[in-house]
Amino acid sequence: MNPSKSLTVAKLQTTPVLIFEGVLELYNLYTCHIRPFISEAFKLKHSAAWTKTTLFIKEDKKWFLVNNFELFHLIKSPDVDFNVLGQKVSVRYIPKDQFNFDISFYELIDLIAQHNKTIDIRLVYSQLNQILDQEINQKLFGKNIFAITTFCQLIKINEQTYYKRPSEGVL
Image (cartoon, rainbow, N blue to C red):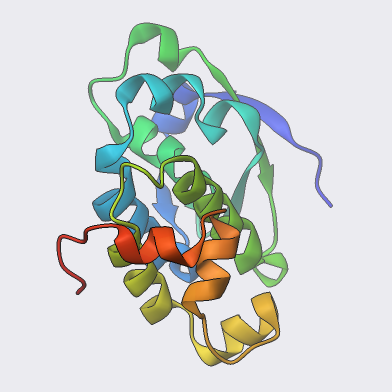
């Protein structure tokens, strides 16, 4: 395994970074249905950008982000605070064949669990259920489907809470 190294947000802003195709749907779920309901203060102070190693797959002079979706928003934003630009981020490069969907999935699940009171968990479950095919479900849970009971256990709520939550509409 390659050792991690530190890069600043400013350096990453000058790098051609894209989202790795294997996690693009998770990133879109985060961007559309989770991120808008997380406070700016939380994003900056408690983001995985500062606490976890960010994995990249390098290919054809491009860097493909595998996890840490908030970092992608930071490095693509033109309005990043000057103090944030100097923040160091721990990064590690992995070969494409070492990509592991679990890392991104469980990082997203942790965010859902932390913010389950402010996001539409029924919509999020519906989206995850569409993303997770039978093969991924087998790998993650040893089951063919992503059941609501599994989702509730992962985000540490009971099923009653899930069903009591209002939903803006399940897509």
